[in-house]
Image (cartoon, rainbow, N blue to C red; front, side, top):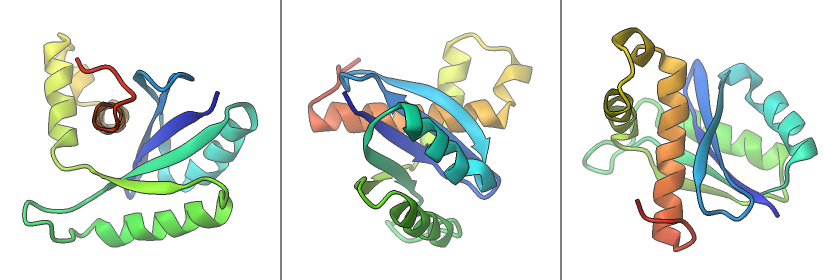
Length: 142
């Protein structure tokens, strides 16, 4: 069964999360250097079916674009070119990094581990994906 994949796109690093095959639970997959995103996804999709790509849309509190919005739009165009058969949808990414940091504290992670920005990006992608699942009616509400 195909999965849903979620991307927390950044200028340097990109966090990636995926659903389980039944699309119930979101799990962090990894964080990659942004320049390696397309090769990573090509390799991943050789072994795993993906039916939808979600990507975080950076907007400010007034729903205005941020400095990162053009980067994400360019990434969406690359994804559409490389994976034309897979729909791409944006999701609100506001506060996901803060939520990821809070989740790391609640999990009892040491301060040194919480400063790992790669892990923050992966958890942020997982939060976006889990929220999408909850609002689409396919995932469990926690």
